[in-house]
Length: 91
Image (tube, rainbow, N blue to C red; front, top):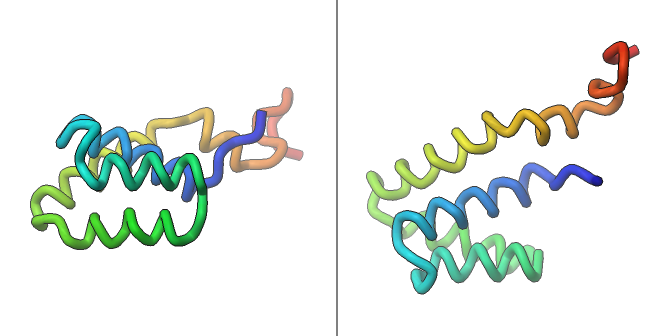
């Protein structure tokens, strides 16, 4: 299985944070869903636009959630290091 790109992982993590914070009907949750399904640069830009428009404290909380989730996803981190997960480590 191919490891999702960091951008895809970030959008998914922001989507989960938005869902938990606001619910499924919030524009940020809807935009992250569209970005995940469509994957267009315009969809990703819309997520960034909505994030930028949030109150500072809310945006920081969502970003903290997403970054924590990404840094704790060891499988994804290993997936970005070619050969690292092979028996015997990297060569």
